[in-house]
Figure 1 (tube, rainbow, N blue to C red):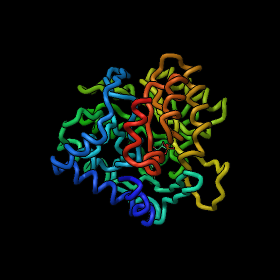
Figure 2: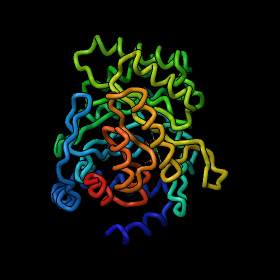
Figure 3: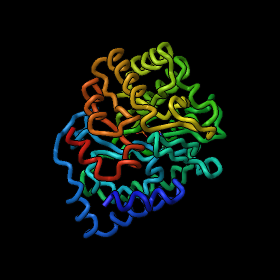
Length: 330
Ligand SMILES: Cc1cc2nc3c(=O)[nH]c(=O)nc-3n(C[C@H](O)[C@H](O)[C@H](O)COP(=O)(O)O)c2cc1C
């Protein structure tokens, strides 16, 4: 099917194509015969994995940013994924950057995006999660971000409010401090700032009835010292894991003037290197590998490097939904 659908999707503007895919998944969730058919087609088999107290049916998840507002969870369960990371969600709704803001580079198998956290906001996403059907056993994480107009000094207010709001509604939470499209956000990865933010969140979690695993998502553009600092903050605050990595500002092998974060093949080696370093710095800490996962071999290399789980985004855009099943067997 995918060889027929892909040219149609790629004839559309990337954000429009994404909207079509989102609506298709949403429809699959609302129409049980279609869900059943897809679940049969994309069934991935069981290869269970334990991480931060949760049992995943296989290693493959959908990375943050695909279903930002939890619109399509009902259908995504049929694709063979073990987990979906909803978001990034911001406390208040915000529109994100002006369009166009996603660009495809088929020859290089990359995307560049400067979405800038378009989000329908915490109230909307919380209502979606509260209504969701639990069919299919999909694990749902929520990726948290601060609003564009919240200064970094007040970041804990935004992330703390989101932590409280989403803990009863999901399985794990991710603190996103690594998107390149919100000005200054990545400064929160510096040792002191990150330790203060994560420490503050851990303290707030203590008071909650529903305590969820808390992870942080890091950038591939941290140099060795900065990565060591960030991992140091993770270990000091004893949060539950790391998602590595977000998109890159690098343009190695990609000629474009478009601003934003690049993903796909451009990240294949760098994201793996970051995962390898984190595993070395923090043996035993669960790491979710994201970035440049385009083939089953990329999955294998990340698991071999010590990643516990693997997430895909750009690989799905270029490879189509059937790729999940092949990756889950890797
Ligand atoms: C269009 C687009 C939107 C994204 N939005 C988010 C987001 O809201 N939050 C986030 O943490 N990562 C976001 N990402 C990053 C992905 O979750 C992932 O970390 C990155 O794309 C690297 O994986 P890939 O090479 O498989 O695409 C986005 C990526 C793309 C391409």
